Amino acid sequence: MYVLGIPIKNEICVPSKEAEKFAKVFVKNGAVEKIEYVENRDGLVGAVHFFITPKEEFVFDFIEAGAEPLMTPRVEMSINDIVDAFLFKELYSYGSI
Image (tube, rainbow, N blue to C red):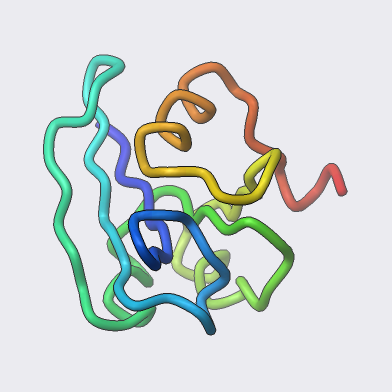
């Protein structure tokens, strides 16, 4: 199982500074098992395997906690779009940009 951390506004992935809430998306066997929401980004640090954002932002807190930061290939992606992109390895690693 993987846990994805995603900053959300209007059900779309946005940079952390614009987020209304933060989703912890539990992905198991290629499908979303459950989604939990936390109020702030700190609720994801140490609780997710991957932190996903649409553009570069400060992610060293996630790296230090053992999570890999990833970027979406396009803006305005929903949670389901992001899970599909994650499963098909279409998200960008910070190391590749």
